[in-house]
Length: 213
Length: 228
Length: 193
Image (cartoon, rainbow over all chains, first blue to last red; front, top):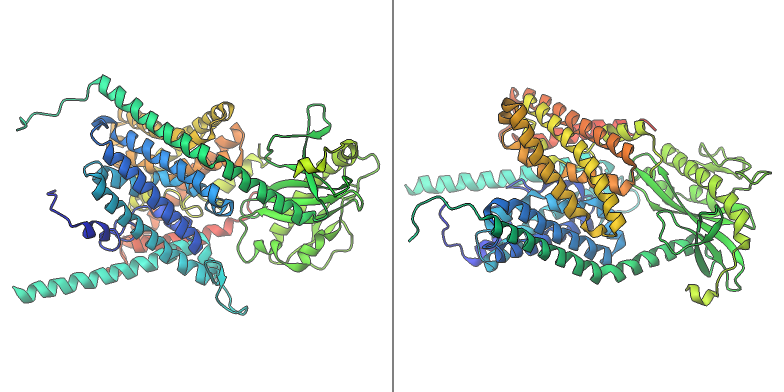
């Protein structure tokens, strides 16, 4: 695959829409569904994952010439696990409540295929600058995706947003949305929406090229 | 410039060096973060527990963590337990109650509670749910439903004649059918969760109340100023 | 040491709190492998085995870490052990049953990143299970994972023959099916108490 020169902004932006980790690459779904039952959980998880991706990516990038080819995956896993452990303790220090609601899913960031995938495909081949942009972009895309799912689930399932009650008492919450099934459904709806928009984009592009030829 | 040959396999020495190097780097980062956050985390945990304890036993000015020692008797402890137990003292160092942590299986997952026992009333006088993953909107009603919370203003937990267990086991009954002070008025629609709470309290009190009644008065607390 | 009975631990892990349908662990392979019934069965078996081994290893490592007083090494040691176990299973499979190994293809190394296995190790540590409880827990989790996988594959194979709108095909359909399966598994709540 030829590495064509990608501008810095594009490096960052691609993670937000075109190569969105959750809706396009369909990576990192486990946490996307598990902790998105409230908006604050989704946000924290997204930020924590972004942090790990950034730090692990930078480490891999800086150390890339010293990591032996045969032991790449093990080394990446080690480095990722290190920063996951760090973010685990950092969150515990910030707020025990948050840590308790996220539970073991902070630790599960280590098996988020997204981070390992980026380390293998990108961070091991590029310099720290590019890797930072890529990590931030992918992380932002991941966080937004999680937030979309989380906001829908919290509003419909608990009638609140970030803990702030939105509806008067009479509102009957759709409890199913904060249960696992709701996670699957919410993600399915967003995925359908994204697919539909991308489909229209592709069709418009096709019509434009046909008109031009 | 590169001759197109297969890249030689990394030598064992350089592989070994790299792995050790990376291992050292990782270990360093972890230890640094751990040390940097340890104090803050401990503070958070203590603050949370202190807030929970004062919520269930507001009359207590100071607390002492206790545990059953090797001799089978209650004694002060400095180890952080999975299920901590505290004795509460007021400003004049007289015993006002005990706070016990207990856990058990609920509908979905483990439920962890904190309850306060009053020596004066021989009853459970406060309950706080620390951890629960019950069904939102149904099982979590145990934390907010007023008639359920009212159960724990004076839930009878007196000892039987030989002091080995509860005179009347704590049991959850259907909503509206509570007739005795040792019964827990359940929540319709959250039967399993309310029954679980009753069972957790019963099992825990059956073990702890005898020990607390037997040993607590003998324990002389240190100067309250030191406890804070 | 939790005081739950072994039977209730098994049922809880397999049905009530099914790893895939309730905890969202192991979603990637769940959607990747569940298109064909045969691969689903094989993957289910492989994951169950790795879960059992990982559970035992995690229990031992946790004892060691607690004795040494280094809880912060938990995540790293667990994941390294899991990665090695998967390597081991891969080598064993290659030796003992080459056709199975070929059929599994890319999916075998993917078990390492299967959140279900690490999740199992972490959950059992958090719940404070003793040794036999941990083993039963992993057996239940593996059985539950395999069950969900097989159910999903069965439905998806049937769905292949139906007229599904193009936009919904693939992952979106799988997500909706998973949501419905998850709802049906909710019916198991309270079982085995």
